[in-house]
Image (cartoon, rainbow, N blue to C red; front, side, top):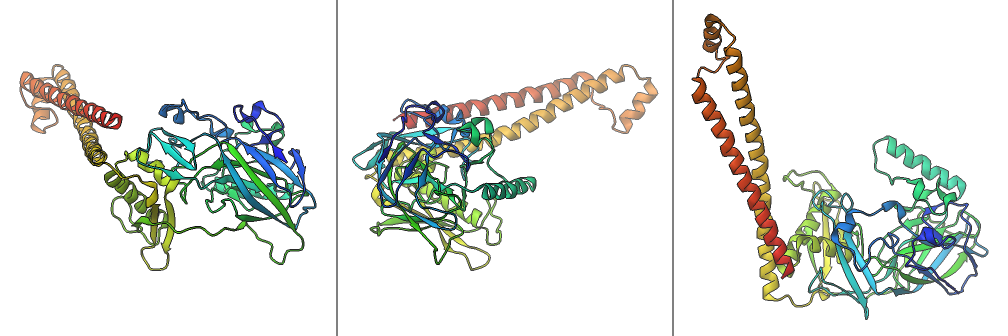
Length: 467
């Protein structure tokens, strides 16, 4: 059986082909039997909003309420609450084009990467190539970003309760955006954004062809759905995207009755995988300012990733944005050590077979790009300092003008008393005015030079990228 979708259309334009919220009242699109191969076509994870003609700016205009468009649900015959559904991932098919993106406000290093960026990949002969990542050839390692089964009404209510409570405590949860729900009956459902006990946005790259996943069933038929296929991804999906693509997955189901072990969360078996030579950077729990925190895995991960980004820039000739993308689509994050206080260690691991031999020119270009980025950072700090000094100079000039105007209205005795107590400036009027105005003019000139240097450095970096 093959279930088709028109990936050139948005999910909302093809009613009955799928959904983008979890809800037990969504009607299944098909009934399937155990042990039968089912091929399920899928849209990409952001519902076709980025295409082969998209620009970097388009990544800053995405409607994230449209994700993830899933194909399903499928009613698996003989699956009942209390059973375990085993889903075997038989094979995957890739579209011709994929993408990865830096989306402002999203991703592990969202505070450092604030500008939108899109890398478009040609998916051909088992490899992904992108003009934005020169010298890189990423092999296919396809898996579904989102895969799961449907919660019961009771399970749905419990998920809503705990996430609402988390939100009230100030925690981050996915916005519901009910107006973007497909179908409309799922408006009071839950988003597909996070992973949960029945699967969802697992983004687990071990779920390749040959893997088997176990889900604890809550509703009759299990109501299975799949989507958000990735051509490849590093463990961690650092910037928030793998190599996203439309495509198809072939799956096979088995229902385990009266299981001896009922998992609380999805569990999975993987096939054997060949070893690859790798290079890794590491990080410990140090903040950006060098402060040592105790056993902070987030900081250790941040340090390892930033080290890897620097290495990819200086040794492999990538721009900083391209390096961040590559970390997300090809670099695995691993907990290397989590017991020795005060520092856990996280490794960022990149397989070396993805790199074509870098040219001398690309390495030189990358180093010059890094130097330009360093110069730009220095000029931005200088601009901040100049803005503060200019504000102070303008304030001093305004204070003097106010005092000079008031002095014209005071009698001689009051004026002399205020000057003796240094409340009023005792400099001659014309000299003070000239000095203060000159300082304002001088700082305005320095600020304009600083901004001109920034414009020049930006232009230089853009020219390097075009080489």
